[in-house]
Length: 271
Image 1 (cartoon, helix red, strand yellow):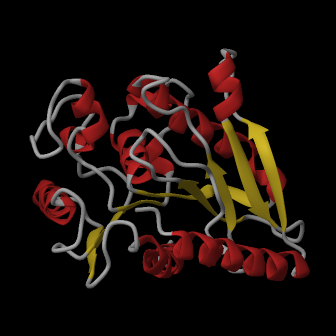
Image 2: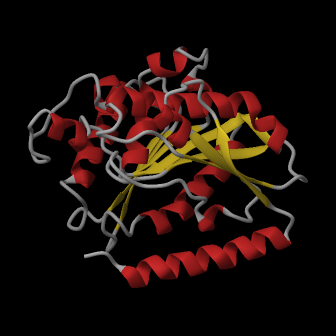
């Protein structure tokens, strides 16, 4: 059942945060096209919003990918990331089944490439980019951060990013892709659309955040725990995992933003 109380509470909080942010001279520039694709659905979906202050210069950038199971969802600026000297880029991407999985992943790559090439105009540093996203968004950022072919199409090396920060992201082949193959969400499956397949020790720092293992979706904590262990065994020098006790798949994103901000400060202070 749709939680109307939570929905309207989030809207009210977003309004309050936006009011504060504008008072501090922040701006949200909306619906900026980032893709060269010209089909009608791409023209509709391949847009991003940027939250920034004209007073910024060379500030850290969070590229935020929304969740929704690859079949729904809309871009938004997380209120918890406002007013913290961050440039935030919120991305829309094409969705299944109207698009295919290659479209979804390529849109994520195209939006990141656009950001790298243009973010300095909004006070952000192309050398301080953090990829973050919840659920399907975590899956997409993991795909383009680990399988280098997607960003290679745009002459971008994902190893230059400061960190990959998936919130309860899928690392097996996404269950929406499995569904198209007639497989259950509980049927483990790994192919070229599984971030886990491309785990490597030389990717950027990986900060894995999950909800409570007893509350998460489809064993998502255990899936990510294996991802964490595999990266450790491969010799990755900076991979961490957090389990947010008492938070389910939908609720875990809000407290996870605190971890993201702490990790941004840690990583940048060590560089």
